[in-house]
Image (cartoon, rainbow over all chains, first blue to last red; front, side, top):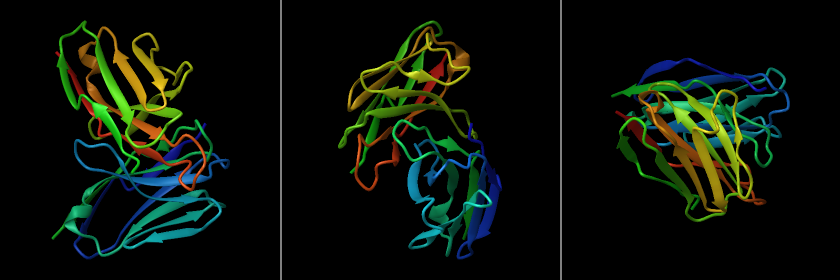
Length: 113
Length: 119
C-alpha cells in the first residue's frame, strides 16, 4: 500500500520568510496530492492540491510542486504570516471514488513575528 | 460550500458506555465518508471507509464490533464507540467526498472533529 513520508516534523521561520515542506510517496499509481492545514482542536482544511497531470500549482502565497519521476511533492508558502502557524499534512491517493487519503505525519509550522 | 459537520464536538463518558458520533455533509451528497482517529501531535489514522448503503470497510487492526459505522444516507454517517474504555479516548474526525463528477470530484472535506474522553 501507499506510504507517505513528510519532512521536516517541525519548522520555525520568521514572519515574511518562505517555508517549504516536502513529502515523498511510494505508490506510483497515486495521482492526487492534497495539502491540509490543521489548527489546534479543529479538523484539517484543504489548502491546495495537485494532480499528476501538472507539475506545479499556485494559489496566492501557496504553491505545490510535483515530481512524479522522483515521487515527491512539496508545499511552498511565501511571505509567511503568524496566522500560517499550524500543522500541515500532505496526503496521497489514487484519484477515484472510495479511495482513502494516506497522510504524512505532519509538520508543525511556527511563524514568529 | 462543501461543509462537513460533526456532533458532538466534545463528549465525556464513563467506561463501559457507548457513544455515537454523527458526521453530516451539509451542502453536498457524499457516497463515501471516511473515519479517522488522531492522537495528540500525531497524524490522522484511517479507521474505516463508509459507503452509503453498504457495510463499512475497516482498516487492519480496527475492531469492527467496537467501532460501529452506519452510512444510511448520502449526507449522514455515524460512528458508535461501543463499551468505551479510556484507551479509546482520542480525537475522531470524519471526511466526506462528493458523490460524483465535477471538478472537485476527489476532494475530501473534513469535519471539525469530536474529542472523546472516556473516564
